[in-house]
Amino acid sequence: MTPSGGAKQTPRAFFSRPAQQVAPGLLGCVIAHQTAEGLVAVRLTEVEAYAGEHDPASHAYRGRTARNAVMFGPPGHVYVYFTYGMHFCMNLVCGPEGEARAVLLRAGQVIDGVALARARRSRSSRRSTAVRDLDLARGPARLCEALSVDRSHNGADVCDPASALRAFAAAAPVGQGAISRGPRVGVSQGADVAWRYWITGDPAVSAYRPHVRRRARAKSATPPRTEGGTISQ
DNA sequence: CCGAAGATTGCCT
DNA sequence: GGCAATCTTCGGG
Image 1: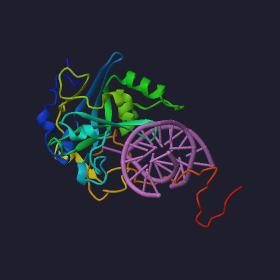
Image 2: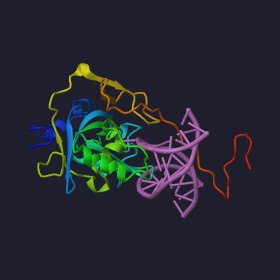
Image 3: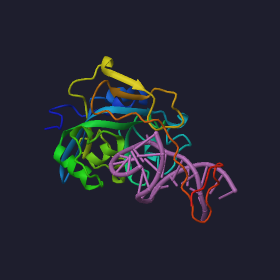
Image 4: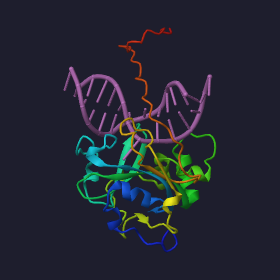
C-alpha cells in the first residue's frame, strides 16, 4: 500500500520540465519517507521554484560547487542543504538535466505518521509548548525535520520505487483556480518574480517573511564601527 | 586564510 | 518586531 492510498509514484517525466511548471504541479502531491522508525507522509501545500544559474536567488547562481552538484544532475533527485548552522531544507531537482533547476519544498501537512513526526519535532527542539498538527511540516526546515530528511538524503531519487523517500501524485489534483502565487520567502535577490506557489487558504502554508539582513555579530577584539549611535557599556 | 551571510525557527520584549 | 542559536559555504584579501 502506498502512503496516499493507492496513488501512483510520480514519474521522472513529471520532473523533467522547468521548475516553474513543476512547482504548481507538486501542490497536493505527497512526499513519503519510510525509516526504521516508521512512515511519515506529507501532502505539499507550498513550494518555490528556483531557476538555476540565471536565478540570483538560486544556490546554483554562481555555478556548480560541491554543495549544489545534485541540482546539475538528473531530475527527480533530492537536493538537501544545511543552513543557519542547524536546519536542513529539501528541493526536488527539475529538468532539463544540467540546468540546475529545482523546487524548494516549503510546507505541507502530515497525513501519515503524525505521532512520529511530532516526536521528531519535539525531540530536536527546545520548544516548551506542544506542536500543533498543522505546524508539524509548516516551513521548509520543519518539513525536513518531520520527514527526517538530512544531509544523508542529498541525491536520493524520489522516482525510484525502491527508494525510502518517494513522491506520489496528488490524490485529488489541485486545480489552477486553487493555487496562489507570490514572491519567494527570505530571498534578497530575485524577489521580483512570483515563484512561490501555495494552495489558496490552506492552513498548512507558512507565513510570508520578507528577507532581512542579520546584523553582523560584535567581536570582542575588534568591535564593528558603529553608525554614530551610542555605545552601551 | 578570514569573515560575512544565509531558500530558518522560536523565544524575547 | 527583534534577535540568538549554530556552522557551512563561498567570496574576497
